[in-house]
Amino acid sequence: MLKGLGGLGNLANMGNLMKQVQEVQAKLADIEEELAHQVVKGTAGGEMVTVEANGKQEILTVTIDPELLTPEELDMLQDMIVAATNQALEASRDLRVQRMSQLTGGLKIPGLI
Image (cartoon, rainbow, N blue to C red; front, side, top):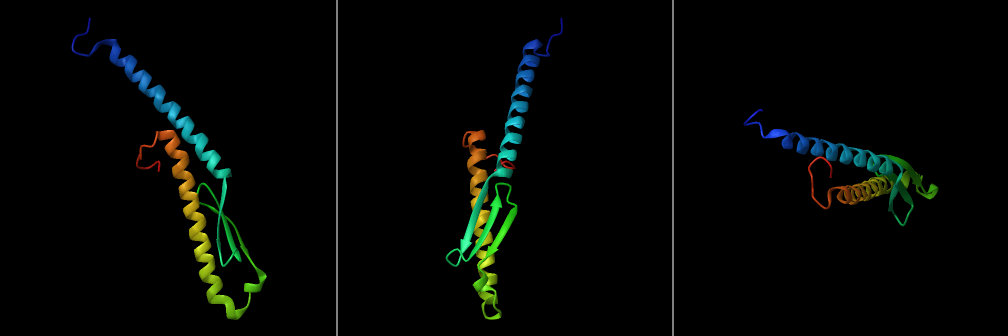
């Protein structure tokens, strides 16, 4: 009999912990896959510029009203693209935080959220 090693109970606890970690990893992978397919958008100029992003913070589309495609409107157009992109990315981050907090029970775990 081995003494001082805590017995087999500690091995069983370690096995349960590893199983829980694997379950969380699987759920995390599922959430990442979901986020890749969820689309959020940001707009500027009364929707004259629309930017769509997915939940993985990837820009998918940029739509610009043709009326903005004049040299006189160039500065305003550039500003609207930046504003709409930032809005879309913020919505994407919010979506990610929401989905991850469901997994973590509201705990803010660095690297996940």
